[in-house]
Length: 109
Image (cartoon, rainbow, N blue to C red; front, top):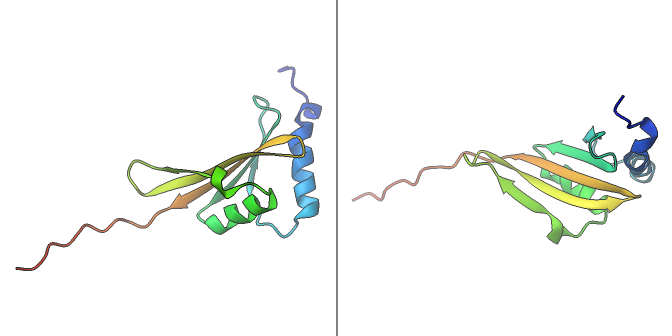
């Protein structure tokens, strides 16, 4: 056995329960918890930055703390936020698909 028990996930489970009770109207995320980091709650959203923003507001997190990563090929990226809520570290991820970049068109002579 790993030595981690369900009770060790109390912080993220409690945070998720409180968020559910206080904000049942929020968009449903992909939820993750890990025995490696038992105090963390991971919430992910795909292709809709409005869902990420709704959760950021519900968590009362400062917009200046949001990070943004772009994939090397320019086709997508992620918004990231790390905050605390109800004793848990909450990791918010918003995965984005970006429109294809248009090649510049040369000027006509």
